[in-house]
Amino acid sequence: MPDTVRQSIRERLSGSRPNPSTYDVHGVITRVYADDHLLALAVQDFLRSFRSLPQAQPDIEFYLLTKEAGSGADAGGRYFAGGEVLYDWQVLRYSRNGQLRYQEAPGAGSIVADLDAGLAVAFVESGMAARAWSVAHLVFFPIWAQLLKTRGIYPVHAAGLERNGRGILFPGKSGCGKSTLSLHLLRHGYRLLGDDTVFVRGDGRGAEMLFFPEEVDVCPETIDLYPQLALARNLAQDRWQPKARVNLSEVRASSVTPSCHTDLLVFPVIAEDGQTRYERVGPTEALAELILYAFLFMDPETSKENFALLAGLVRSARCYRLYMGLDGSELAAAVDKIVAAA
Image (cartoon, rainbow, N blue to C red; front, side):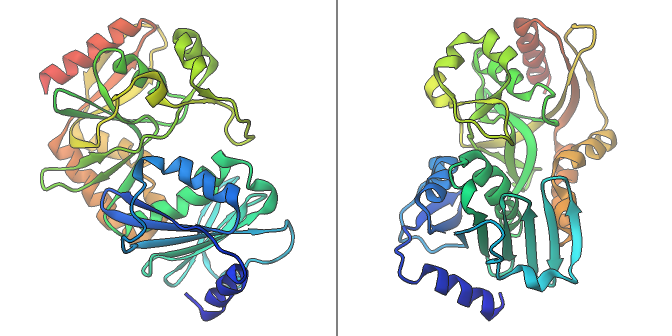
């Protein structure tokens, strides 16, 4: 990372005493420094399941520094005027210049990162500090996920569950019913690895799923189905996340599992006719669809390894499409049959 960026970090932290937090995420140590208490709390809540001893040597160092809106305090942006744009979405722009990466989230902040060095510096708009969900998911997570990918851990937009030693990955876009499906299955003895994001890494036989137990995002219809969720929901408002958020540890204790081999790949679809059913999917079709949910497009530096992992996953796992009807018991019974056939 350029010396001017490092100097900017030193200047911003001079006179302050940031309290670093350390997290062991499946063997990859992340240390987070923040110059604002609310920024620190946002990441601490997001990664609370991975808290580790501060003596651990970090693989990734991540700085969260506040800046006033329009102050131009971002010392990294100047290096990306001629950089290559890798991803440009409505709320996120991601560029590269050599080994450096630059992320902009208009109205939220920007980040400069050196993937090889495992170093990232975020300049967060001061008004964002109180928006914990946005700090964690919009500012912190995208770059942090890229840093994890360079260290062999890859995110998938999916739910992950386990039953009797069988791991099931349910990839799908937001709104396809992953969270509601997860809650149905938890009531029938399944254990959760994640309801929206699951990490995977190679295990010699295909892919190992690694838990990432965020708060579950649920819509009002799901809370109507499970009234007990209302007691555990997070009522904090955030304009980038309109759904209610539920801490599963408050709903069902010991409902998560740390890791398991991926035996089944199941693509959930809301059934238009309301009838639950399932069908086999070939590996080529499964791979083409899985790629859509694996963040492959974000950075070509890790795309080859990521693609190889996904290809190994569809070869080793049995692949299905699950059409989800309205009856929760029928839905759980269908998944039971898929598991039994594996």
